[in-house]
Image (cartoon, rainbow, N blue to C red; front, side, top):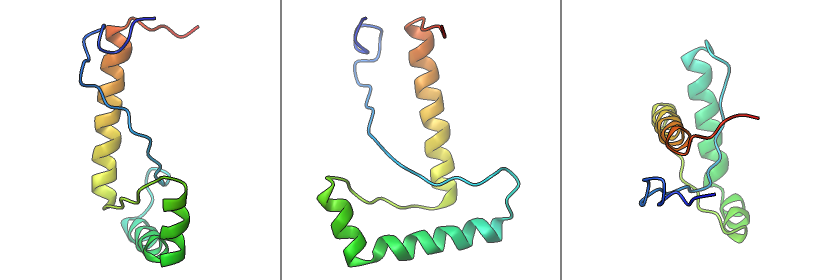
Length: 89
């Protein structure tokens, strides 16, 4: 299998990330409440320490920023799959 550089993506980065999503149509007030609760939890020193001990870094943003990340990731990986001619088997 060719590397990503060999198929035209020499600068491709694939960081590991996690996020929380809600069903389509969830009211914005609920999304905001969930985001606030996650921010509060991820600000706790014990939570930050546990995540750091796993070698991870906490980066929390807005729901809109996460939506953009998802759209960017989809576009990036769609291009990689097409360029590499990857087919579902």
